[in-house]
Image (cartoon, rainbow, N blue to C red; front, top):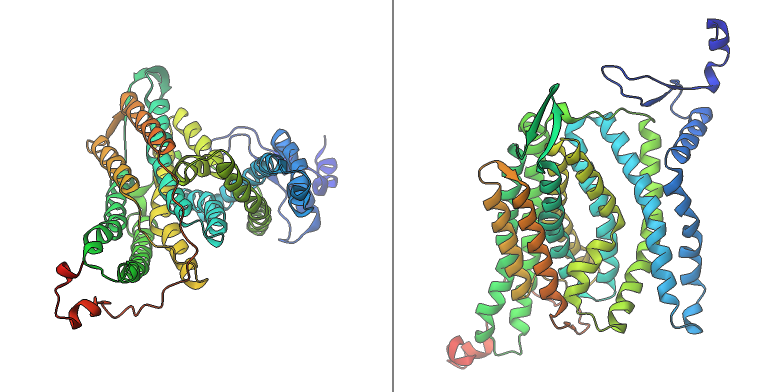
Length: 457
């Protein structure tokens, strides 16, 4: 084709560059105005064509929205199976579209934002799902789901990443074949493991407080519950402040140490406005489907007498498809020897769940009169502490190999077995207690009677 012909068709073409030093077969579009309709048509067409197999699942979006609102459960009691399947399948392409938008936006913002945006996108969907469970008054499921997400990330997913990234296979690195059975980890892994230890300490305090203070309460646990509520609110605020400090560390003061820039090879395809709209539309669709998915899981658990712990620890984290896609991509990055990127995404997800999503859920309950406290039971807080301890121990020498990943996978299986047999916890619907956050809420009855709190209990 001549130069004139090429110029004549310039507005209608999509250039796919060949492999070069900085671009490996990525599609590029002619630069136009940010809102140019031709660019947006090209973006949408390329997006649909690129993931056409996954995008076929978008056909389930219509029944996922229509069936739950048609009141068919009044005539067919087993329709919740269809609601679960359709909602689950509809979330898959929506999550994939959201991931594409996040990757493209991270290419626009820079490599240091990649892991943060990836983790935030997956955790946002989980926040929506758990917020619906919170509005339904399923506090035990919400608490278990928070821990379940963290445990799934730092045991199952991180373990698979370790195995895939360090399995003894012959690979070609730097032009030389070599047998790699271990890999080194970066600064952010050490920081994340320390942050997770701090998060465990913060989440353990309310549970320990209930155990220690309950014998001193002579008011049918009202004072203990009131103090637990205040402690949970204060802990939520402090954890969000820790998260802000972590962002400053990760994106500003130690950005060059927290990320391996050489592993970042994403090329911006669309424009930033299209990325934001892509993320917003997919999040809206996921939110609608997530409401049905949560209701179906709750009905499923009640029908088969599954414990609230098993639903929260195992089922909900595995059913959050956006996290599944994110985890698959992290494992694929590890298989391509981009181990720092893979581990950063996984640990960012866990840290954000502990320092951001958990406090936000407590705050949402605070605002909407849903008394969600951080009162985890002994089994929940014990397995979290053990998992964090194992992860910290395994990464202490800044090297991991496949056997350590295998250990983490086995740890998750043991946790799942324990919660499968753990009895269900049913909490009564109760309003938010009217407690003075600046008062110690002492056991006044016992004190006015001249009885020590210990004797009063």
